[in-house]
Length: 560
Ligand code: ATP
Ligand code: MG
Image 1 (cartoon, helix red, strand yellow):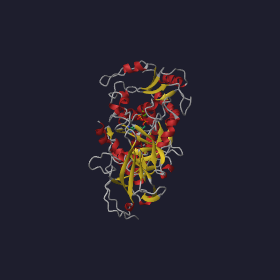
Image 2 (cartoon, helix red, strand yellow):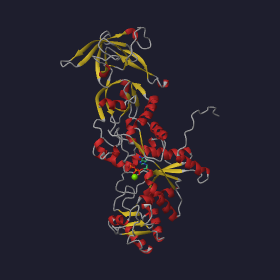
Image 3 (tube, protein in one colour):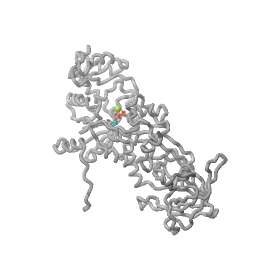
Image 4 (cartoon, protein in one colour):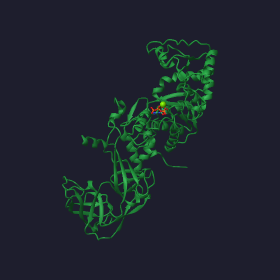
């Protein structure tokens, strides 16, 4: 038995946990079953991640289960590529669905139930055009008017509906509508559409159907078929709840219940599949998994970990009000997680050659350094030190301001895990650009065995020139300049033209050349990086996942 005490106070319950606890305590359910119901018309984004963490998280907490159900009732926009990516993304986030299901599997049942509704006199085939239906709908303050087809007999409606299914009518020729209440204060209840005609090929049912159920006829019944106890959706579906309940009640089937929470939006990006698709199709980004995108696939490629995304979703919690979560909060959790797991490595993005004039030519010595000071189990590695080195151009200044602690003419700096270096001479080309530094090292200043007595403030990273390998490094900035691009007239106008900066020939230590796609590293002083799938032998590609510190807001001020 564990004697360990947990010191962390339990997080307060959010409103959905309170509902579930109350339902379980009242014996309403023995166990809970939730579902995540994506429409396979795009890749999942950070908003979906919230919904996944919420649905799977609730079920896990209360010993229940979660189905992944594709809401594939619209044949036109759906593709198998999206289905596959969604399954992969849910699993990558760390969740295993109890079942992977498709609303399209329920088409025969939904059709039978529509006929039940017709025979109860609760649905009718309407030959009005979309415009005519809209014109009779009324306004929130004025009741609507009856369609001329509202009083057709059940038998006649049944025959018409069967003819709709048999393909006798062209697209849009008629619809099946529920017969509810044209004066309802809830506009959704004014004889909503249940079926429409669409002669279109479906990714799973092929050409079996030319009538397709609307969301309102498919969703609640699918929940009911699966005995979903808590059907959680975003706030815009709140007005649909009345219809959700009405359909289930008319059919007398298992009473699943709908609950709503506020959508999760993230600052400096958009969370709408339609908008994300535009970015892909119009080549603003390189694909759905371009590391600048807010999709789960892009987060993975960029180097965000599932743990950090889950932590972000959990800590923010769920609410009833629309909110814009701060991108830097997500980055905070990414940093926190990578700090624990990423191996430290040296890389130089903009190299400046250094000749150590008092170091023998051809000599190499190996200096030990830690792989991760946060994790002693990560071990140590050897760095080659030789007469020719590279440092960052940024770590040298010819005319430094006061309190500049890096290298400058006549100044000293410590090379991390190596020696103290003194800059003796600056070499320039014909146009005055610094091309090379001639320096001397202090042999008795070796890190860990320093007997030099010198006090040096600055510590910089470096590489041995003959040992360094090259790599492509991709640095990312926010994809949008506006904090809330969706609130702008045209979200595309706020796209940041400098969101990708490619360093073609960065230098890396040899240990980095052997990473596998997805491996995480901290490049000392430069940030966290991850091996990109574009890597080829001899030319690895790294994505900067996130900088070491949150300096983004400060840098923006500097730019203006
Ligand atoms: P989009 O506008 O991006 O197409 P959607 O709601 O149409 O989003 P679906 O595939 O239908 O996307 O969504 C699947 C589930 O994810 C739904 O339960 C939906 O409510 C939820 N969801 C979608 N976007 C968000 C979001 N931004 N925040 C929280 N949950 C979301
Ligand atoms: Mg949708």
